[in-house]
Structures are given as C-alpha cells and as structure tokens.
Image 1 (cartoon, rainbow, N blue to C red):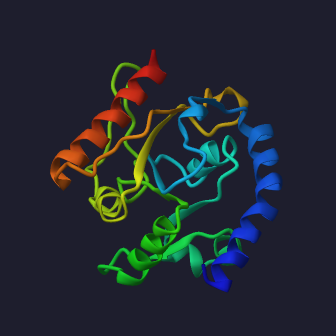
Image 2: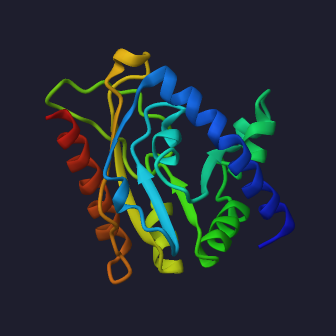
Length: 203
C-alpha cells in the first residue's frame, strides 16, 4: 500500500466516529444484515443510490475501511478535503478513467473493501409503496470483481433523508461470488439481488 493510501485510511478512521454520530442522530437509520459483510478479504459493496449520504448506512456497521468511488466533482468543491482525507477514489465520468480503475484494483488486490453504486449516479425516480425502481447498472463493479476475485456484497436503501421520521432502512444481503459468470449474467444477478432487498425493506 502506498504512503498516500495509508494516510487516507487513517483519515477515514479519524473522521468516521464524528460522521457516524451525526448521521445516527439526524436520521435514526436502521441497518439489517451487517453480519453479511465479510471481516476480511476483497469485497465490493454495491447498493442503490438515492442520496449523497448513502455510504454512511453501511460504514457505520463495519470496522472495515470502505474506499468509495466518487465523481471527481466532489474533489473540486468546497468539501474536497473531506473526500481526499476519507479515502475516496476520484472518478472522471466523462472518460474511461483508467487511473480510478487501477486504484480500485490495487485496493481489492490488497484484500480491502471497495464501495460502488452501480447506477453510476443518484437515482431521483420516486417509486410507489409497492414499486421500486433502479437505473441501468454500469459494469464496473462486476468487472472489478472478476478481475480481482472479490466478493460482491449487495445492499439496498429505502426511506427518505428527512430526519428521524424518514424510515431510513438499509438491508445488506449475502455475498455474491460471480467469478464463474459472464459480465452480463453477473450484472443481472447483482441487480436482482438489490431489487429483492429493496422489496424486503418495503414489506
């Protein structure tokens, strides 16, 4: 691991307690299935994306450092110090960002945890009580999993970020091994798992 990466993992560990306390007090989130996150080995945490705070739902229930992939705009704004210090990976969505891909592979090949939102952007669609929606999935997560032998841990977030009454719920599913699957089948399986978890939250 590079010195820069070690420093950013330290930054993650320093910032996490403060961020999580604030997050819990503001939203009173419920997280189900934290035992499904492996305590070691390369994993990619993948979930639906409805808010800029989505990653905190999973971060607060695991001791593992999760390196989330985030759009490069966050690294240019007023809060750029936070994203750099907390171990996020900057991704230029306008190009095939080989630098981001290389950094993500280094993390997984080191046996660490990566976070990706396969929709690629926040989903602003509003499903009804009995209907949930997902945007088309990018192939980055399943491609990285195959190349690094990483397990994929699906999760689903439902509810609203409107304070304690938003019924914010995250359900974490069992790890998926897609090493022997083609990318199309793997992506379909990942999407199905996340949709199933979303429906369970709605019941």
